[in-house]
Length: 274
Image (tube, rainbow, N blue to C red; front, side, top):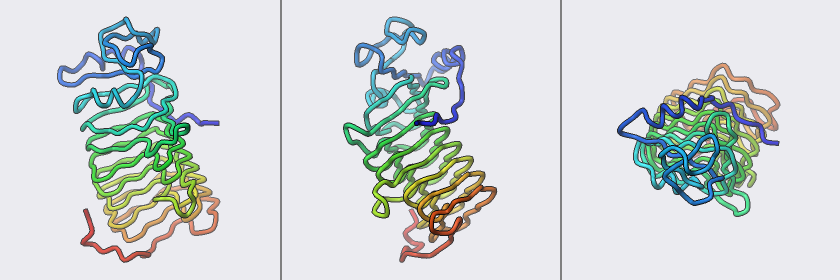
């Protein structure tokens, strides 16, 4: 059974204020219940078209494609069977209120399910599951904030950042990823070559590789106030990384290796820093 992630509840009145509060960015809505692929009017109460003037879409990717840099995308409750490529800078993508929003890669087989291609991105309150590759994947991006999300049952790593800087992952539940086993790419939460990152207040468990990994040039990172257990490898793993602070974590039920492991396993060289 899916555990709902902790989310920030946004009252409807506040949401309406967000929709109309800025002249330079807009809010787009995604609701799988609308009859048409997209519309220019929407009723929050009825979940139908024909209400207030705003852009509404039936699926996620068309809304992302229609958005401009800096826009906010609000997703209503439901299961969205699609992979999403975030190709606009400065987007905020979030669930509406405490509604359960699932992005699912099972039937058809899809992955990575959320691929971040631009900087300054915020993801909040999403359940991402059954990816045929990674759950959330970002390459060479900065200023990324992932919060109150659940990522599970990915064939490869759950939340993976490769190169980049200024990344926060917080209040997330990451579990049952790396279904390929030792052949899977990356770990439950991976920071590879990332400068200035924090992984905090997350629950990371039952992944078939390490829990939280800082590796290959990761620099100035903080891993703290997390709960980690039953991951197949060190619960927290540091490999060829520098200035990584690890504190106030709860770690138990290590499967076969250390709770916290610091190693130099590869021939990676400092000049490979991004």
